[in-house]
Image (cartoon, rainbow, N blue to C red; front, side):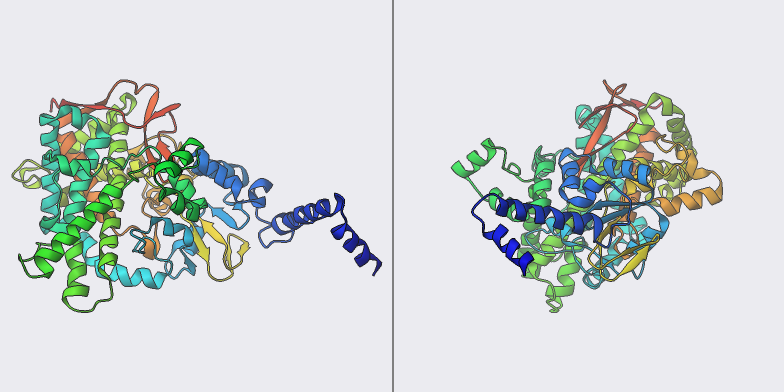
Length: 533
């Protein structure tokens, strides 16, 4: 009773003792909860990361999250605690457990930041069951057999021809690969998603189609992503302000981003395409489009009367496919051309040119473009793409999952609700698997079969398991066919500044660039020189 009396006196006292007591209790609580008494206390890692989520959030703000986590793995090993309730892994066993078939892990609320029009879609569904149901509708459209033959292959080859024509007709535009490759990827993915009723013609110079992409490099995109992840409600409120309120928020640096918001043009375009489908086809005014994801979804749920998807669900799904098929493909192609253009990698470009010159007449279509199906099986071309995706994965960051049950990974027990992840950046830089990991070396994929098989197990640019990238086959043949056609006709060399500056692209809220260069710059020009061969 005496102790209780003392505590009551401390709490109710008029002096400073009461507040000090409460602050002390709060500190003790956090120390106990985060460093001593919690279920993850045995997992190695810096205590500052274990103590508060804001330590990792600070790295997010700086754009150094992925490289910081990689440094922690180098110091602490394949299992690192990166938050009070978050663990990063860098092992094959963790990959299988977290992302493999039958995994008990689900996607956490983090992914809701990628919802479109407030609707969930294939990328943002929380449960595997929701994801599987939607994926079943789309699998055939993205299957390898569908991509390699027929109308999809013909469309890709036609877009490659248009890119080669762009090099001749608009050399300045073509040399700015960040822009011209976005045109290529956009024209491809809009045709796959909308067919001939919504395919863009940015490569052909249609100004309105090119303008759709004006906001994808919006400079405050990274800042807005950070606010959206860490302060979602505030971000929604702040971004809806206008006039004086918006001005004041910007003045005190509390406005998460500027308008137009990145990718709003792409999402608006998806809405326009849906309106065209609805007015011309669904209402029976003008036949139907030749193919496309939107046609597939409308046939399944509106025309056939199943009605499981709302119209907004369909538009959101299609808009997400545009987002997913745009930056990832164009950015990887830019880095492939970058790596092949560096003087110390000239022998790799020459090897690729030699593979192209070995093609027979039957391997080339009537427009002089290597056939998609042929490009898919060229060994050195495949090695170049694999090595590019290893070093410059367009999504290098951790892909968080939440444990739904108690599970043990690499000897550490995770309680339900723990966030666990792997990141391609670290998986791809394991020196025991990839010797001299920062060196661009396509030949490593053509070496000892056992070593190549092991590298493939660690190669993770498209994620893995049931929720791996559904558009993987489309992306691969888009990249292979363009790279084959370009290096069949041209030698590529980097423009001014390459000796010290690496090109860079934005992934979520950090930059992807060549780690062997000190400086980085978004947007570096390249030159196409007529090949002597």
